Image (tube, rainbow, N blue to C red; front, top):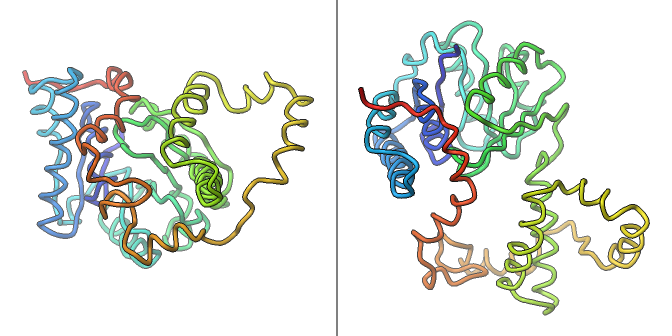
Length: 312
């Protein structure tokens, strides 16, 4: 069994740790500040409290899981760890320094799995001494609940590295897609950007509102593709009909390669989304706890598959 660590004590790192200890596996989290470590511990505890509130876990599960996590600023705690999820800031110099620290302190055969959402795997491979043992394992938020992980190889990724990564992710009950090479956005973020671009375009053109776009996605697109695949649906409709639709729609789709004016205006005025209190929505009119629950609710059933620890 791999000895697992998470390098990075932010949102992704704390949720990754929640998933690992939630399956009864010890986990070491490496941070870089006392404040960050405290925030990480509170985030993990909040994740458990949310599960308890939904009847998906007990206080005994939480206590047993929290006993499995070590949260520290000391990289020496990586000794003998064989698998490290890297979840630090999206900068090559930050990651280079972290990779050097991991390789200096962890087991000689350590696999480094970067949680990056935007940096090319080939670039990351150039930051390590042993590129054959590095790949991308990109999760989605909330990381401990949303089951998909995108595993991205590069030219020098060893087959054993992929095999070990898939074995661990399957232990954690993940659904995995494997990309043989990097493309910007990988799969999911690439699809998302296409939807975001078209949505902003339709709002700018006065066609509809953010609320109605969300309603269309939630009650048609989202529901449909939660049960059948996108390309299963394409085949079910058939090439003839899809070709006729494409001929009508393709010429009118947004094709901009630049940031759209609505976004630029938001950046200029500080109305940048939920954290700012205003974006496409007025977040002062939304219940933060309700939103957090709705973000997690599609994935509650998957938690029942966890091999949760419990107090003895």
